[in-house]
Image (tube, rainbow, N blue to C red; front, side):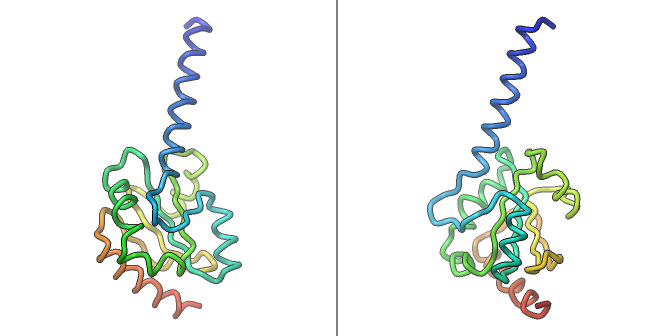
Length: 148
């Protein structure tokens, strides 16, 4: 390949990567405040004493985007916005690969629930409804309280 073609392909790959990352951070109004850096989220959970909710997702995943648009900002889930440290990790971002591997993420959306110290509490995989997710969050909070 000529240097000109290589430059074109390199530019296209960089642009595609930046587009995916930007879309993953674009949340609808009324969504919880998501962190996108796992180490920062772990520190925030330890400091706040709140359990973590880690969403493994991707911009191309239709169920992931449905959750992002309809579930997380829903009235059923809003009472839980301040009870967790919310983390959104795009599985297409190479920096998130180690964390996804740690929690054995093989399908998305994969939502991993962790104690304030980072120990696994529960997980859910796949699409959900606002009501189902609110029920899950309520149960996870009970588990987190018992493990504190």
